[in-house]
Amino acid sequence: MRMATIVKNCLNSGSLSQISTKLVRFNVVRNYASANRVKAFKKVGISDRARNVAKALEMRTKTPEEEAAILTGQTIKSVGQSLGSRGYLRPTKPYLPPEDAMEKVLAVAKSKNIANAREMFTNGQRKFEFLTACYEVFKHSVPNSQLHEISSVEDAIIFYQTPVDTTLPLDTLKTVDLPENLYIQHEYIRFHPETDTMFGGKTAFPKSSTIVTGLKYKDKYRGHVAKKSWP
Image (cartoon, rainbow, N blue to C red; front, side, top):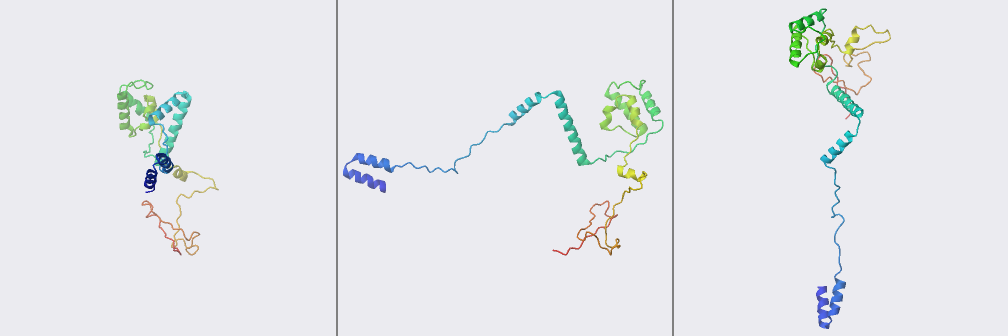
């Protein structure tokens, strides 16, 4: 409405120059853009291909000693993770070698036409047949982790002369003569107010419960739920 009034007044006065001057003054450029509406500049990241190429170039610049050290560190780390997830007790059967273990291994080698005990196995099939025959005699097989160590009959003799003890280190201490000032409590003690009556069935930790959750020890140890004064 204001602009129409200005044009009408200028037309009535007959001055076109006034119209152009006032239109320029009236037509003020206004910027309604907001800073919040402006999209942030997205930084271009490195693609997987470029990252792999850069990593390959970095590995090429390393010496063989450095690469071997890296691989060794990764191997030790993986072994540690394996022990942490599965424990140190392996499902291995105990083995007590007989006194004539060497004679039995040599007899098996003779039956497989192997005359020289130090001769390396020529192929995997021959090694497999020999170790299979040894298992039938000793009922003790070579683990997969040690198959690469058995490369001759002599290695098999050393393997079958080595006993395998699966007893835990803590259980082994039961048969060892300990010093007089050292005592090991193999069976842990759980508090229960009905059996521990030395102090009237009271414990030093009155708010702590001794709950047995394992199926293995549920019948062996009794659980106790402590009474709480709150809530």
